[in-house]
Structure formats: structure tokens, C-alpha cells
Length: 118
Image (cartoon, rainbow, N blue to C red):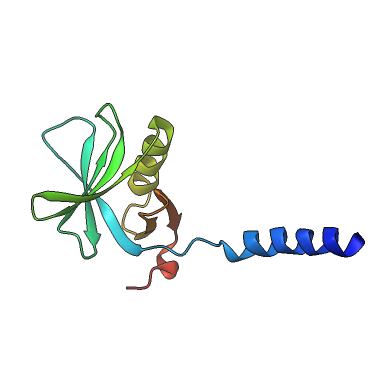
């Protein structure tokens, strides 16, 4: 019986350790530009996407990824997440913010410039 509990415990712990999120894409963000909308910002960035917008104005806030004029991916954000991402980019004046994005899990994380690997 102890062996079964121990095996289950190890299985649960190892699955949590192995589930470390590997980002689909890592993006160097240099800042933001205003758009014709008050709370939608175009990210100045270096990635495979023609345009990335931080949308804190629409009913569903999000980080929208475009290829040409077509949106190809979107990460849904809560209003607090949107605001925090805005201030993280805004406060990174003259520096680079590293945005790690996983489209499958609809998540992102922010890292320092040294964590960016393009």
C-alpha cells in the first residue's frame, strides 16, 4: 500500500515538474506606439509577426498577433493583466522587454533582455 501511495506521489510531482511551459515564440519588445484608439497600442518589436497590438480597450482585452492585415493569434487578457503589461513595457524605456508567448495555453510571461533568444 505504501508503494502505491509513494508511486502516485512521485507521478504527480514529476508531472508538475515536466509541465514547465516552453514558449511558442519569444519576442523582443522595444516599446509601444499609439494608434487611432485610446487604449490600443502597437508594440515596437522584433519577431515573425508583422504587427502585435496590446488591446486594453475592446470588450475582450488581448495581445493580438498579425500577419499582414490578418490576425493569426490572440492571447486573451484580463483588464489587470493588460494594464500590468502596458506598464511593464512603458517602464522599460530604452531597454528591451522579452515576451515569452504560448498560444496553446493562452499565456505569456515577461523576462529580461538577457532571456530573449531569437
